[in-house]
Image 1: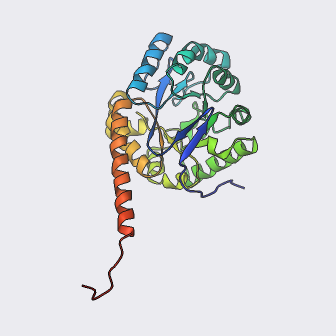
Image 2: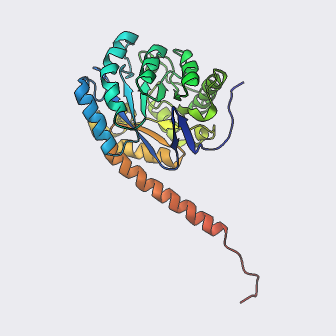
Image 3: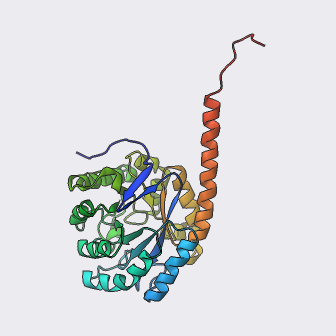
Length: 304
């Protein structure tokens, strides 16, 4: 059984002690407290710098902060839970005090549990419960929001095999199964979001197809996260380094928005915020115009 259902796009996402309305684009600001992340590794290892950067992202329009202390770049090696927590702990309390929801980007139950105890309200599991299924039990027990991302293999091996017969169908089926496992562990459906895993075990063409057919994932009925920010597929298209991929990130986010994505995990908050807000206003205007056209009453022939 795949667990796949077609309930339509989600309109609200419940997290621990809060609920996030999905009636506008939601921005998740990326805070990497790692020495080796592909774009900003090492910049925010200092707890003070990390907290200042998080505050700046909130000021620029981030709705939540996603904190990660283990790199998931292609080829990255796993770090022990104690080391991951050593990086995360001095940053977490300051970020929680900013007053926006905090997501912890981890595949380890021990790290997630400590982060939730420290004030985080969302678990972002890039392994989709493949690394530690107990993350679902933890989310169910605490009422935390849970993000299930698709990744083939591990960060160290994920780019070894990027061939799919139908990347969108296979990703959708894997996410539906992961979601079902979360439900079986006790998670409530409206607390579980999904992420197609752009750049995680996909080719350039696969990443583009996932965004182009994202409506097939939103049809599962879960809130859809997407994280194209500064990814290598943009570099392959534009032939520019990570710091120069802002425009490409914006284009990918807007394309995902109109296909049903609602949470956007990005580095460059202000330009993405502005672009998505304008795109969303246009989408709403188009919807209103369509509704108005649909309610027009035709006059009987010869009535004039």
